[in-house]
View: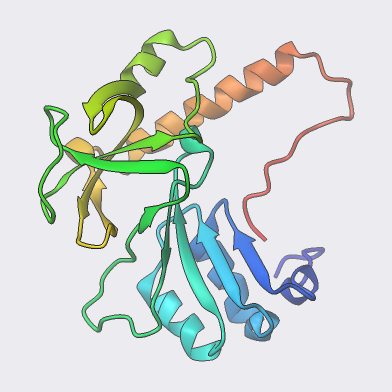
Length: 222
């Protein structure tokens, strides 16, 4: 643990539930390995930001008999979380990944083909997200907004959706499983997209001419 880093036990003192976002799974479980006793009083643990490791979840459940671990998924464009999945304690022996889960309140998830039509259960399609948490778009990025935020005629009528650009399958019960990135785009594309978003935020902050000595920090790990 780095010098000056608060102990996990101190951060979670008296908490019955904990929310872990940002770099999420891997970084958090690294801390958990150092202080497993810190979560003994926590009843629910909601983790998001990166794909959860099945091995880490098994290890946490073995050490914490009373905790429920919930996987949270959702891009920033949908106000962080769009879906959650309460991970069962009896994870299947052949499980290789943790599902995204089902939509949270006031949110819709669709699995569509390249023509924008729903696919059958178990068939791979692209994930589209709608609902009250959907962003209006990207600031001063009209073309990107038009590309990522689309209107589809589904159900009762037209609905504005965000294209998550990931491949998923939907199972009975509304549980969505991540399959991959649409078009086999590698991680470098996502890294470049994130870098572009960071640069955009930095430019906006600089334009605001914030008084020297003030800053906003995004805390990504505990």
